[in-house]
Image 1: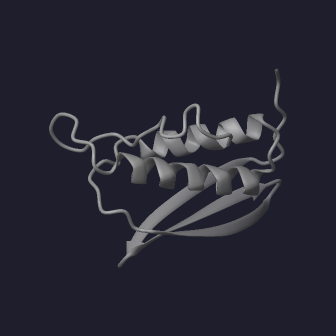
Image 2: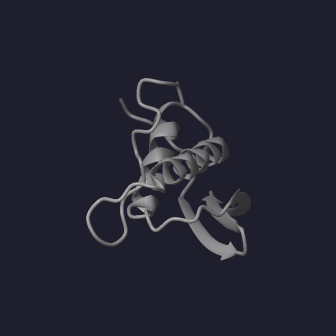
Length: 110
């Protein structure tokens, strides 16, 4: 399957402000720059290893399923927030642990 996308570049930036995490994504669509803001509650965990790769993979997966870019990013952000929350209390080895990538496997459709 070949998926045609109609944008050039997505960049997502995160910053913490108190109890919230703010994410803004810039989408360069044929020379037109769009900025979209996403806000979520900060999850107190050190298990955030792989969040960037997971977010970009989720965006690609939603694009492949036919979602428009803004909706794909919104759904991917919701997915990664839930994956961080579900993996927050796991202790795997030493240091920062991974998010729970498979929290909804077999339970719900995305």
